[in-house]
Length: 89
Image (cartoon, rainbow, N blue to C red; front, side):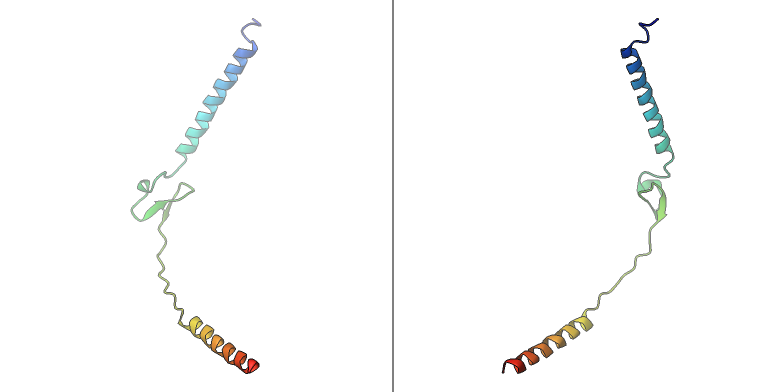
């Protein structure tokens, strides 16, 4: 009887049960996902990193206007040149 429960058999049994348990957990995690690809969601949705379908956000178009900052920097440069010329000469 002691020969049946030798170290090699126990190690093999533990390894087999670990692999079976790991496969069971991986299958349960895969089954709990709502989606895996964008195709799994509707046309107006996408599959997020949390494996749930989310609606696409509204696309906000922002027009950058750099005229005022450029004007302020230009005026500051002109004033600094005038001040430097007065100091030197």
